Image (cartoon, rainbow, N blue to C red; front, side, top):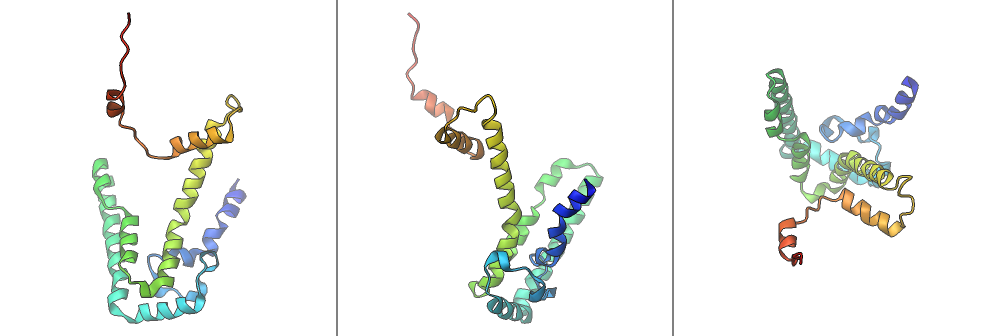
Length: 180
């Protein structure tokens, strides 16, 4: 089991620099980053990274981001230590801070932003796929093996979307039947 776990997460070790890029791109050499899965032009990325590192306005964004992330961790630790579990929900999310920093960059850093967004969305898309597959396995059990693809697709849409029907409005539109 231990070997299986190590094999499964080996990619994290080999892509450590790529994953660290989203929070600290200033101290990373572009040759250490795995850009293959993101379809990024290496030359453009290198030029944009050089430009990013030389401009204090943009490089300061990451210094500010790191200090905000440190403050968040301190706040989380304090709330946990004091058993203030509801206060944890009020702390801004780390992802929101990171996306906010990257969203503030102009489009002249398109390749740098493409890499950052690619790395940031890796885990979210994997989670969505795993969630949909689990839902499909629950829906299409041995008992319900006669489902057509169209019905399965409909059930999956209902299960994986956040649609909430307005039942009160729908019930007002129905005519009630009185017993005789």
